[in-house]
Amino acid sequence: MARRYARKTGQRQQSERELTIRADFHDPPDLDKLSELLIRMALQQSGSCRSEDATRPKRPRASAGSSS
Image (cartoon, rainbow, N blue to C red):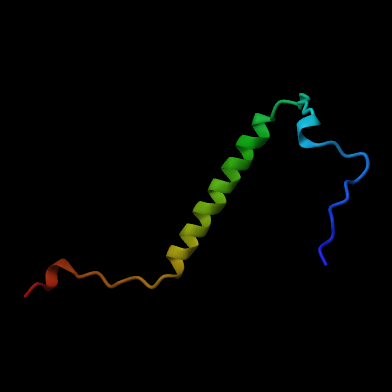
């Protein structure tokens, strides 16, 4: 049994709809806070890269005097 579509009351067809755009003004971004956050993230990332380098086993270097 197929049910018929029943139009809901209070809804308009798409062709009858009107869209409006309303400007919503916000305070300008706080550049001091943003730059501090960027610096902190960069330092944190460089610190984690350094700690990864410290945990990797170092390859033995060939000494210059041992060439036979």
